[in-house]
Amino acid sequence: MPHDVPLITTIVGGLVLAFLFGTIAHRLRMPPLVGYLIAGIAVGPFTPGFVADTGLAQQLAEIGVILLMFGVGLHFSLKDLMKVKSIAIPGALVQIGIATLMGIGLAWAIGWHVGQGLIFGLALSVASTVVLLTALQERHLVETKRGQIAIGWLIVEDIAMVLALVLIPALSGVLGGKGAAISTNELLITLAITLGKVAAFVAVMLIIGRRVIPWILERIAATGSRELFRLAVLAIALGFALGAAYIFGVSFALGAFFAGMILAESDLSHRAAEESLPLRDAFAVLFFVSVGMLFDPSILVREPLLVLATVFIIVVGKSIAALLIVLAFGNPLGTALTIAASLAQIGEFSFILATLGMSLDLLPDTGRDLILGGAILSILINPLLFFGLDRLKPWLQRREGRSPGVSQAPAEPDYRSWPALQSHTVLVGFGRVGHLIAGALAEQKQPFIVIENQDDVVQALRADHIPALYGNAAAPGMLEAANIASARWLLVAIPDALEAGQIIEHARKLNPGLDIAVRAHSSEEVLYLEKHGATHTVMGEREIAEGMADLVLSARGPD
View 1 (cartoon, rainbow, N blue to C red):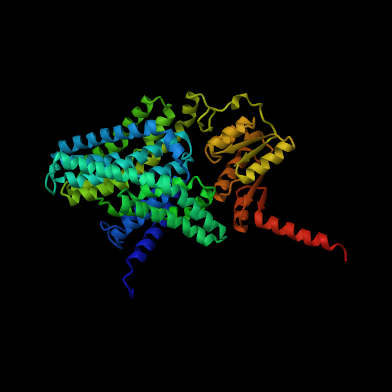
View 2: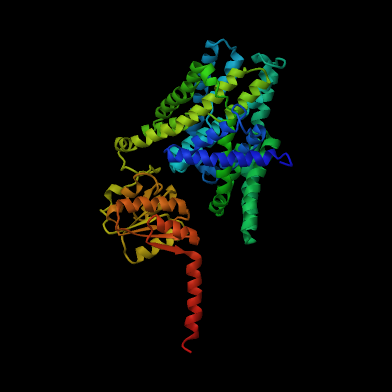
């Protein structure tokens, strides 16, 4: 090769191998992220063959975390965060404390001093942003009550780790690492400055960002340029994340989250989420590849018992602590199990803490390898925990007195009192298109039921005595809850063709004679949806073209 291009080879090598191993994992009915991790190990420095640039991979992965947290912020408003503060704040802090103590205990058992144990324990206490959000998004739980608790819990963990990253260097001498010991007054001043920076960042985002971010996007949207709009979304996500880190000292992820959360109040939030999705997915893959690159598989042979003990703390010890905490706050068992499974892994902050600990002589090489090994294995185990939770879902819903497949909204629906629907229409999605469809059906007195994943929309529909189920139609049991087997029509009014294809395919299995109409945005989407079982596809551009042509032809009249 004529030039040294580590950035290109790292991106291309990582994505190509991630695609190959991810496809194999999917064919073996395993989560694709397993393949991404294996791809990282394959291009890492501890295996023969091509070796990607580890430093560049970590920076690319950081972009993935920024974009992912920005996307979560777009679906998680400040109001939602305030709803779960009573459990997320104390729950996360207590769970961090318990997990850290377990890590200190294991470190003490193998002869490490308290400072090393503290870094090790903190690294085991904080869950991975990417893994947690990927699991919640795959199961359409982000906008449910349990998803909001899990994300709020994660945010509190991130803030706690930001404080830890600032305080650990100042306390390094006291903990037995590099640096001189500091006085109590100096420690209090450092803590006050750190808390002040975080508070200042939040205040700036709520006071200034709330006006600036929507204003920028509205002006760009008014230009009509999709390219500029997409660029504006990325500039806001990355720019605010970088500014938050350099000006206020908070993490990139936290800065991006708040930018997305502020933007969520704008009418353009859904379009912003759609435009940033492809890059979010691509860089999330690079995150998993970068984790695999850091892993030295020889630790599994050198210290198998220590690896098992580390994984036990992450997957079992931390999960049980979270489970008991959530139950202690009076939440249902299903919610407690979801939170426990979500937190049963570690990730990016763990790696940052490990790197910092080694630079300050507060963590031995074995500690780093145990943290990375624990991360890899817990990430591999995490989908299995959710799989087990999915299998328990019908039992949990019967135990909680809910119809299988119906997500729990803030106020329990009275769907048991609805009359049995027969030869009805199931309408998926109640956005602008769904709203117009529902109006037409109601005007003609056609029976229908709506499936929608926005709880406030569902509550409004129920208030108008319109049958509505809260949840995602692609989730197990949702179509059954809408009595799709006895329905006459299924109208899929959501813009996501891939998700619509899953819904159509499942509906066709439950009701082979069902008429299914779905929206599409391109000829390729039409073919895809028809292949999955759609009987009617409506493409906006085609309908507009035919309507305008009909106007011309009807105006001409006979020659």
